[in-house]
Image (tube, rainbow, N blue to C red; front, top):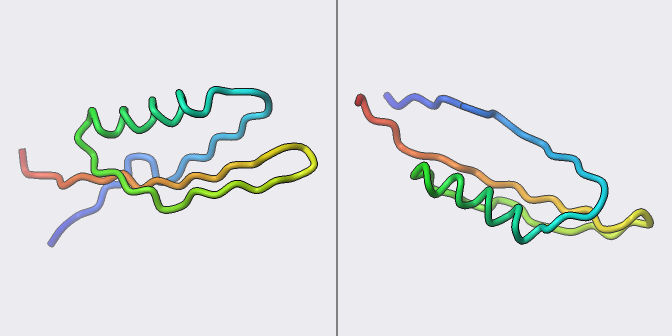
Amino acid sequence: MSEVDYVVPELDIDWEGRLDLKELYSFAKQWFLKRKYDLTEKEYHTIQTEEGDKLRIKWWGYKKVDDY
């Protein structure tokens, strides 16, 4: 029987202000890949509001765990 261990069950990041989204996206993606996680993007959409654009990205990072 396989076992699932959620290291971080869910993480939300709220940010108001300017940021380099390309750099943040690249950094987060490389973090998963460097640690040999398989990464699936489950959701990516932008909502335009009066305050500005709101972006929602949902990733699923997983890897098989062996007995070692």
